[in-house]
Image (cartoon, helix red, strand yellow):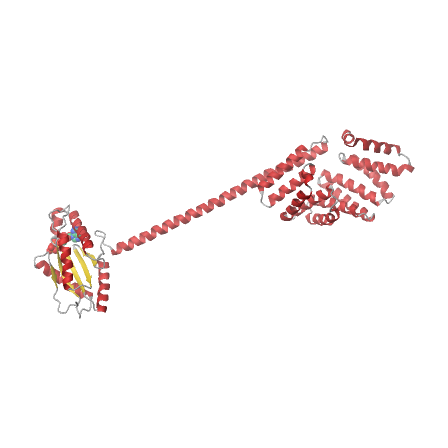
Amino acid sequence: MADIEALNGETFELASNAYRSADNESLAWMRAEAASVLGQIALRTDGDYGRALSEEALRYFEAQQMHDMVANELYMSAFSWWRQRDSQSLKNAEQLFRRSAEAAQRADNPFGVAYAEAGLCGVLEQQGRVAEALQSCRASLPKLKGIWHITEYSTNVNYAAALLANKEPGQAMLILESLAKDWPEWDVGYHGYRYYFIRGQTYAALGHYEAAVSDLNVALNELLEFGDNSWARNNRLIQARFRVEQLVQSLERKTQEAAEKDRRHRLLLVSGVIVTLLLSVIVMLLLRHRRFYRRMAFTDPLTGLANRRSSEARAQEAFAHAKARQQPLFIALLDLDRFKTCNDRYGHDAGDEALKRFAKVADKVLRPGDVFGRWGGEEFLLVLQGVDRDEANTILERLRSAAAAERLKLAPDYPLHFSAGVVGLQHDTEQLAELLTLADQALYQAKEAGRNRSYFAKDYAVLN
Ligand SMILES: Nc1nc2c(ncn2[C@@H]2O[C@H](COP(=O)(O)OP(=O)(O)OP(=O)(O)O)[C@@H](O)[C@H]2O)c(=O)[nH]1
């Protein structure tokens, strides 16, 4: 009672006097009016006391068919139930708001109807009856538009809450944004709390967790600043604070989860990139290996020259080409002289050095188009295209003197001499093999003749 008097001292005093004085039948109307005023003041902080007074006023107004007053009484009473927020109180509030709407209808008072519908909008929303809440909000809001009263403001907030519950956070945010524009003065105070509370949840539903947490913190501060000594109000504040804190916690968790998800996505992306890179490296290595492998299949590993298989294939190509165009072609088989003695005297490594050195010299002396490969052991194949017999001889002699000029490290006394059996493509040559046989025979003859020389196979009709 002390609270009530402190809040509404003068009005309460006057109404109390009137209420107490009007104690006979003829002043029943005055007593009812006084009860109504007292009830409205009391309902703000002490529901039971206020409702008892309101009931008394209501009985009188109903008996007198004062529908307007009935609607008002019912509305105030409903409102007091609504404030208690437990499920039974919400049901009571709903019933009273419905009765208030009917009475306002009978009084032909559209504002009264709109107020009752606005109350229903909030009460139904808080009961989770979203579809009915939306219906009531939509029915009341156009009629409340422009009255610039807290009811219009809070009904919009309730409508936004119902839209949010109906999984329409985008629509809810539109309403909340226009409210912030049209009602800047409601940014603070108790009603601001609910605004930020709903907007925070709407932000959360839209995935803006940081904004959500910040709004809910504002709502929390609003509640903490809104001080009142009334136990009922404190109780509500504590409950609301508790709910907000719970929500803030769960949103912080969600923010963390979102960050964790984001981290996992990044990790996945990074590992994807790493796997792709690794795969590319593996593919690259495989390709390199394959290239190397292929090269090795055609290369003599000691000298780096074309091996027998490859030299023969290239000789075959050159043979077919020259034959088709009737162009001259010389084939020579070269064999290092007394190579065995090099191995025997200086060792196998010295022999290897001789083979490598000879390959190097040939590489320098010969033209890039000439085919030069290791035929086997200390034997080499040389294919000279587009040269006549004299030119072929000149090339071989150039190679001979260049090789002879070499001094080997491991076999300083071994002269890098070679014998060569040479044969030219003849008009009637059918196969490369024929030329190879003739070159081999000529090589034998060069050896027989004393080595370190070239011997040309007998050529009756060499292409020149
Ligand atoms: N170091 C080394 N020796 C090889 C290689 N391939 C073959 N030889 C050796 O070359 C020698 C060839 O000897 P021979 O066929 O008797 O011929 P030669 O000693 O050159 O005598 P002529 O051909 O008659 O002048 C053998 O001892 C083979 O072991 C090789 O890759 N490295």
